[in-house]
Length: 204
Image 1 (cartoon, rainbow, N blue to C red):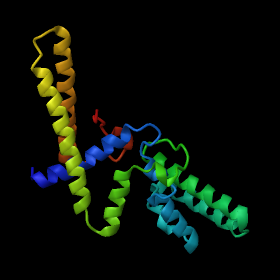
Image 2: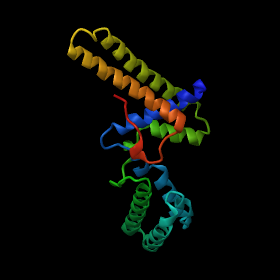
Image 3: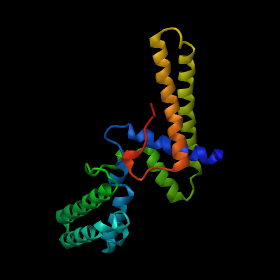
Image 4: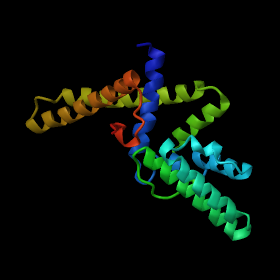
Protein backbone atom coordinates (compact mmCIF):
# COMPACT_ATOMS: atom_id res chain seq x y z
CA UNK A 1 0.00 0.00 0.00
CA UNK A 2 1.27 3.46 -0.88
CA UNK A 3 2.27 5.34 2.34
CA UNK A 4 0.33 8.47 1.38
CA UNK A 5 -2.87 6.45 0.80
CA UNK A 6 -2.37 4.62 4.08
CA UNK A 7 -2.00 7.75 6.16
CA UNK A 8 -4.78 9.62 4.43
CA UNK A 9 -7.25 6.80 5.08
CA UNK A 10 -5.83 6.36 8.57
CA UNK A 11 -6.51 9.99 9.28
CA UNK A 12 -10.14 9.56 8.34
CA UNK A 13 -10.38 6.60 10.69
CA UNK A 14 -8.97 8.69 13.51
CA UNK A 15 -11.67 11.27 12.96
CA UNK A 16 -14.38 8.58 12.93
CA UNK A 17 -13.07 6.88 16.04
CA UNK A 18 -12.64 10.12 17.96
CA UNK A 19 -16.11 11.45 17.17
CA UNK A 20 -17.77 8.14 18.03
CA UNK A 21 -16.40 8.34 21.57
CA UNK A 22 -17.97 11.72 22.36
CA UNK A 23 -21.37 11.27 24.08
CA UNK A 24 -24.14 13.31 22.52
CA UNK A 25 -22.03 14.22 19.48
CA UNK A 26 -21.98 10.91 17.66
CA UNK A 27 -22.42 11.57 13.96
CA UNK A 28 -24.08 14.89 14.70
CA UNK A 29 -23.02 16.25 11.31
CA UNK A 30 -26.03 14.92 9.37
CA UNK A 31 -28.27 16.21 12.16
CA UNK A 32 -26.75 19.68 12.27
CA UNK A 33 -28.64 22.79 11.27
CA UNK A 34 -25.47 23.82 9.44
CA UNK A 35 -24.83 20.39 7.92
CA UNK A 36 -25.10 19.61 4.21
CA UNK A 37 -28.54 17.99 4.48
CA UNK A 38 -30.21 21.07 5.97
CA UNK A 39 -28.20 23.37 3.72
CA UNK A 40 -29.65 21.61 0.70
CA UNK A 41 -33.10 21.76 2.32
CA UNK A 42 -32.81 25.55 2.64
CA UNK A 43 -31.80 25.75 -1.01
CA UNK A 44 -34.76 23.60 -2.07
CA UNK A 45 -37.20 25.79 -0.16
CA UNK A 46 -35.72 28.95 -1.63
CA UNK A 47 -36.02 27.53 -5.16
CA UNK A 48 -39.41 25.97 -4.56
CA UNK A 49 -38.03 22.69 -5.90
CA UNK A 50 -37.34 19.56 -3.80
CA UNK A 51 -34.75 18.19 -6.26
CA UNK A 52 -31.66 19.34 -4.28
CA UNK A 53 -32.60 17.16 -1.28
CA UNK A 54 -33.74 14.00 -3.04
CA UNK A 55 -30.17 12.66 -3.17
CA UNK A 56 -30.17 12.44 0.63
CA UNK A 57 -32.91 9.79 0.76
CA UNK A 58 -33.42 6.35 -0.74
CA UNK A 59 -35.64 6.08 -3.79
CA UNK A 60 -38.44 4.39 -1.84
CA UNK A 61 -38.74 7.46 0.39
CA UNK A 62 -38.68 10.05 -2.38
CA UNK A 63 -42.46 10.46 -2.39
CA UNK A 64 -42.42 11.03 1.38
CA UNK A 65 -40.04 13.93 0.93
CA UNK A 66 -42.00 15.33 -1.99
CA UNK A 67 -45.15 15.21 0.12
CA UNK A 68 -43.48 16.91 3.08
CA UNK A 69 -42.05 19.53 0.75
CA UNK A 70 -45.46 20.28 -0.73
CA UNK A 71 -46.99 20.67 2.73
CA UNK A 72 -44.15 22.91 3.82
CA UNK A 73 -44.43 25.19 0.80
CA UNK A 74 -48.17 25.56 1.38
CA UNK A 75 -47.71 26.65 5.00
CA UNK A 76 -44.53 28.74 4.76
CA UNK A 77 -46.25 31.11 2.35
CA UNK A 78 -48.13 32.51 5.36
CA UNK A 79 -44.87 33.96 6.63
CA UNK A 80 -43.80 34.71 10.21
CA UNK A 81 -43.99 31.90 12.75
CA UNK A 82 -45.82 29.68 10.29
CA UNK A 83 -42.90 29.86 7.89
CA UNK A 84 -40.37 29.07 10.61
CA UNK A 85 -42.40 26.11 11.87
CA UNK A 86 -42.94 24.79 8.36
CA UNK A 87 -39.24 24.99 7.57
CA UNK A 88 -38.37 23.21 10.81
CA UNK A 89 -40.88 20.47 10.00
CA UNK A 90 -39.27 19.92 6.61
CA UNK A 91 -35.72 19.90 8.00
CA UNK A 92 -36.64 17.35 10.68
CA UNK A 93 -38.56 15.14 8.25
CA UNK A 94 -35.72 15.13 5.75
CA UNK A 95 -33.00 14.43 8.31
CA UNK A 96 -35.08 11.74 10.04
CA UNK A 97 -35.66 9.86 6.77
CA UNK A 98 -32.04 10.33 5.73
CA UNK A 99 -30.82 8.92 9.06
CA UNK A 100 -33.22 5.99 8.83
CA UNK A 101 -31.71 5.16 5.46
CA UNK A 102 -28.33 4.92 7.18
CA UNK A 103 -29.70 2.65 9.89
CA UNK A 104 -29.44 5.40 12.50
CA UNK A 105 -31.99 6.92 14.87
CA UNK A 106 -32.93 10.59 14.63
CA UNK A 107 -32.56 12.40 17.96
CA UNK A 108 -33.36 15.92 16.81
CA UNK A 109 -31.62 18.70 14.94
CA UNK A 110 -28.36 19.86 16.49
CA UNK A 111 -26.74 23.30 16.56
CA UNK A 112 -23.60 23.89 14.51
CA UNK A 113 -21.51 23.77 17.69
CA UNK A 114 -22.22 20.03 17.98
CA UNK A 115 -20.38 19.22 14.74
CA UNK A 116 -16.94 17.77 15.35
CA UNK A 117 -14.15 20.08 14.11
CA UNK A 118 -12.62 17.24 12.10
CA UNK A 119 -15.84 16.67 10.16
CA UNK A 120 -16.27 20.40 9.62
CA UNK A 121 -12.72 20.49 8.26
CA UNK A 122 -13.55 17.65 5.87
CA UNK A 123 -16.48 19.64 4.48
CA UNK A 124 -14.30 22.75 4.26
CA UNK A 125 -11.74 20.78 2.23
CA UNK A 126 -14.47 19.78 -0.23
CA UNK A 127 -15.53 23.37 -0.62
CA UNK A 128 -11.91 24.46 -1.14
CA UNK A 129 -11.27 21.70 -3.67
CA UNK A 130 -8.18 20.38 -1.88
CA UNK A 131 -7.65 17.83 0.91
CA UNK A 132 -3.95 18.55 1.38
CA UNK A 133 -4.24 20.39 4.69
CA UNK A 134 -6.90 18.01 5.98
CA UNK A 135 -4.78 14.96 5.13
CA UNK A 136 -1.71 16.52 6.74
CA UNK A 137 -3.57 17.33 9.94
CA UNK A 138 -5.33 13.98 10.23
CA UNK A 139 -2.22 12.01 9.33
CA UNK A 140 -0.37 13.72 12.16
CA UNK A 141 -3.22 12.88 14.55
CA UNK A 142 -3.13 9.20 13.60
CA UNK A 143 0.65 9.05 13.84
CA UNK A 144 0.39 10.50 17.33
CA UNK A 145 -2.26 7.94 18.26
CA UNK A 146 -0.10 5.04 17.10
CA UNK A 147 3.01 6.35 18.84
CA UNK A 148 1.08 6.83 22.08
CA UNK A 149 -0.27 3.28 22.11
CA UNK A 150 3.05 1.85 21.02
CA UNK A 151 4.90 3.63 23.83
CA UNK A 152 2.47 2.32 26.46
CA UNK A 153 2.75 -1.25 25.13
CA UNK A 154 6.56 -1.10 25.10
CA UNK A 155 6.67 0.21 28.67
CA UNK A 156 4.22 -2.42 29.96
CA UNK A 157 6.16 -5.17 28.19
CA UNK A 158 9.24 -4.37 30.28
CA UNK A 159 7.37 -5.55 33.38
CA UNK A 160 5.31 -8.34 31.84
CA UNK A 161 7.00 -11.02 33.98
CA UNK A 162 6.87 -9.09 37.27
CA UNK A 163 3.43 -10.37 38.25
CA UNK A 164 0.18 -11.66 36.84
CA UNK A 165 -1.35 -8.19 37.22
CA UNK A 166 1.57 -6.62 35.36
CA UNK A 167 1.12 -9.22 32.65
CA UNK A 168 -2.55 -8.31 32.32
CA UNK A 169 -1.69 -4.64 32.05
CA UNK A 170 0.65 -5.47 29.19
CA UNK A 171 -2.01 -7.55 27.43
CA UNK A 172 -4.49 -4.68 27.73
CA UNK A 173 -1.98 -2.23 26.26
CA UNK A 174 -1.02 -4.71 23.53
CA UNK A 175 -4.65 -5.31 22.51
CA UNK A 176 -5.36 -1.58 22.44
CA UNK A 177 -2.33 -0.96 20.24
CA UNK A 178 -2.98 -3.87 17.86
CA UNK A 179 -6.70 -3.17 17.50
CA UNK A 180 -6.05 0.46 16.70
CA UNK A 181 -3.55 -0.40 13.95
CA UNK A 182 -5.77 -3.22 12.69
CA UNK A 183 -8.76 -0.90 12.38
CA UNK A 184 -6.73 1.73 10.55
CA UNK A 185 -5.42 -0.85 8.12
CA UNK A 186 -8.89 -2.32 7.58
CA UNK A 187 -10.26 1.10 6.70
CA UNK A 188 -7.35 1.79 4.35
CA UNK A 189 -7.84 -1.57 2.63
CA UNK A 190 -11.62 -1.81 2.46
CA UNK A 191 -12.93 1.72 2.96
CA UNK A 192 -15.42 3.04 5.47
CA UNK A 193 -18.78 1.42 6.11
CA UNK A 194 -21.78 3.39 4.86
CA UNK A 195 -23.60 2.66 8.09
CA UNK A 196 -22.29 4.83 10.87
CA UNK A 197 -22.93 2.35 13.62
CA UNK A 198 -20.61 -0.18 11.95
CA UNK A 199 -17.54 2.04 12.21
CA UNK A 200 -14.86 0.77 14.60
CA UNK A 201 -13.82 2.96 17.50
CA UNK A 202 -10.55 2.05 19.23
CA UNK A 203 -9.23 5.47 20.06
CA UNK A 204 -8.53 4.78 23.73
